[in-house]
Amino acid sequence: MLKWMAWTWPTAFVFIGIFTAMAILTVIEIRHPGGGERKGIFHLTTTRGDRLFISLLGSAYIFLAWLGLFGMPLWAPLGLAIAWGVFCFWKV
Image (cartoon, rainbow, N blue to C red):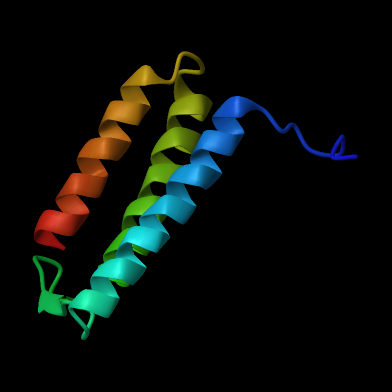
């Protein structure tokens, strides 16, 4: 039925991770409304959802750049993407 896309376990884990992060942010928003606005080093006023979006977008670019420049394996860009996500939630 779903032969039109390469549905593999790594693909499923990416989607599960994104939906889990969104669910966690929803629970945090219900418990602490307001989005946790703050101004970071880029002088942008961001909420938790903005920081999640920036970290996901940056992670996608990290993986695409790595694949274009170096190819496989993808363990190094995974570490870079995790570090980028931590940086986004910590400083952005």
